[in-house]
Image (cartoon, rainbow over all chains, first blue to last red; front, side, top):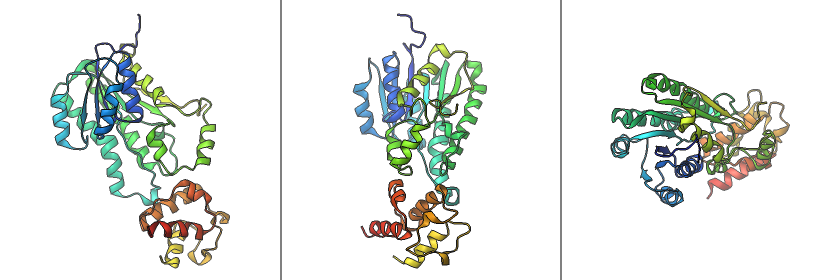
Length: 246
Length: 78
């Protein structure tokens, strides 16, 4: 069957694969033919994910992407990759007067430094195939900042900035680099955030003509960016906002 | 838990409201400069000074400074 969005024959590494958007993207990528390399800190979550992947040949690595040793081990052991989804991330809800270096470090190390260091290792080991696609998890919050989300916004703005550096530097090998900037997505991470009250959630959702997004919505955007259908797209930020900024 | 100290910390989240204007009985939502950012700051203050995580629901249901004080006190006694 004709399908320009097929990932048949492609191997895609996904960080943060044990939950939320990373998990949904892992499952959907497997459904459109990809072999998935699932990476997460949460070994139990990865074990639960693997049987949900369709097809054969998927592998998983449990470890801390902020640890140099794990990145080295990972880059040595992974097969050559056609796509990398830099999805693992943390949130933070600190008003500016309470920001500490420790809080900045925590968010930046996971959201920005870890993906950069992982890609560095993968590139040194020549594990990213010609024509490959890097997809960065950014956020609409990089542009539209809510109170308390300053550090998070800074990390996601930085992601958008460095994403373009990869697009520029890797284009000779036809490796593309793009980011996805969703607004509110219903995930497990979100439901653990306690800085928005139940009443406020309802108010928030009313601002989205298409409702809150689901992890699947982001997964489909990532699939597009991994597929050959997006071969002419690089250095771009895909905004997804459910119509809330119309 | 020291009430006076708590009121002092609470007052520090405002720019134009002095601790001397506040008591445990103060309805903080009636203070002119009260805002969602100050609500977030009060939550951050509770985390920083008392190591207590206040949920947005708890914050939203609180009206007097004593309501917040009592939640923090209950959680620090655990």
